[in-house]
Length: 228
Image (tube, rainbow, N blue to C red; front, side, top):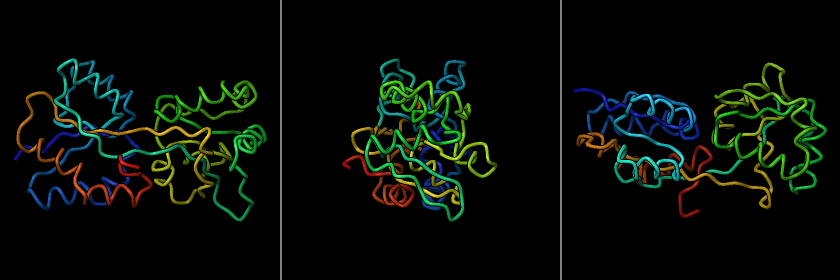
């Protein structure tokens, strides 16, 4: 049988690798061939006519593809907030419990890492501007094109990393400082959809991605159910 080709945002990769896709294969016999990248990067692939059987991405962006007839109806599967991580070790973690303490921690950091193309990085860049500290933070920032930004904490490029909580957990050596304070928090909702005209196996994968068993996996890896 031909494998189901899946495009997936990085934010849910840990859950998919931790059992969601293996469970699907065990239940149905269908293998899944997964491509992981930020939603914006996956959209560029689709623009170049590289179409998946199933896509997981930022909900409102998938809705645009549904409206354009590229994807069938999208189903929301999970949401996640943005967090901060620090390098491994025994040092004291910064206080980010309030917006003011978070601002102080970001300005004091030797370098803050975030993603250029991921949903969290796009939001964080706008947050820095809203807080009036963009120039000070970006003067020393480590901006990566894509990937798991907490990896910059392991090789010394940065001493704080900002990304979606589920993506920070993909680098277990990093220490999770915590989520952004609620007044500065931003939640991204992820959805799954089949490609237009997809077969039964693709539709079965989308149903599995929205199932209670999959949602339990998401919660284990830092995501939340869409009901919060």
